[in-house]
Amino acid sequence: MKTISPGLAAHLAAGVTTLAWCWNLTRRDGVVLGFTEHDRDLAFGGVIYEAAAGFTASAIESTNGLNPGNLDVAGALTSAHLDEGDLAAGLYDDAEFEIWRVNWQDVDERLLMRKGNLGEVSRAGAAFTAELRGLAHRLNQPVGRLYQYGCDADFCDARCGLAAADWTAEAVVASASADREVIAMELAAFPAGHFTRGRLRFTSGANEGAAMEVKAHGAGGRIELWRAAARPVLAGDTFEVTAGCDKQFATCRDRFANAANFRGFPHMPGNDFVIATAGN
Image (cartoon, rainbow, N blue to C red; front, side):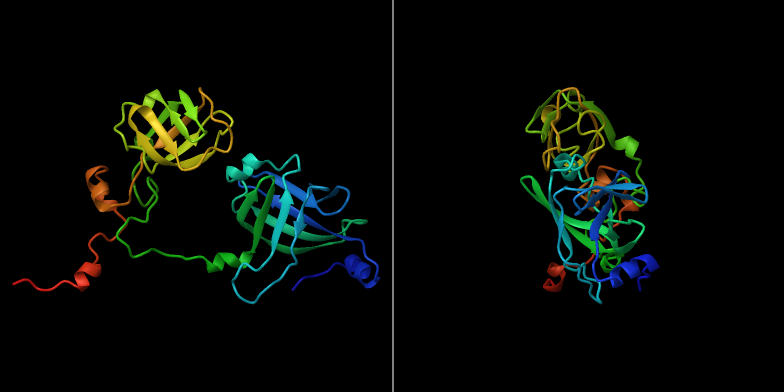
């Protein structure tokens, strides 16, 4: 049930309307951005809604289930506030959004049409498309533990129990290749593979604050990332990297001495148990 203000109700009843769509995005880092399809900027609620940002949206369709629906927004990276590097760095992942229907002649006459979070974001060149998911999509997410061999805890979280500081190293980029492979002399003392599957987070440089998974850790302090950094990686950039864990019981027991906190089921029967036969 939506409550329409008397002013907006009267405007709609007049037959001739001056309405526009406005989108409000709150990124993961707290930055709030506003966009509108109108031909000039609009402002309300302390947010300036930028015009001519290349935004277009599909028709809003609501369902009585928990599916995200077919609403999405497409646009071009033409706004001064929309940066391809920010998209690649994940700042828009799960960002909160609001969609408003606004009388552009009197922005006090407005109605909140939809609220939720950004879903899948796809890019092609200088264009992007973002899926907009309503609040109900949270109820459609799997909740609870999985019955599986591997551990389902995040490395060094509260359930894992290990202290991240004990398994994290700080390093300086000596050289970089294709923004996805770096060499740091500080990591040469660690055995190859120590940081494989680990997490690398830049602490300075153009990618400061960005984090990504380590694909491989080789000899000589070589780190290969699963994807290229969103912005150029330069010699002198600093980062911290956490040891990797393959979520297996033997690794937890032998490498980390943390078997008591293993959050998987390493002894559950599998297909080999079902087809096994008694020996003589």
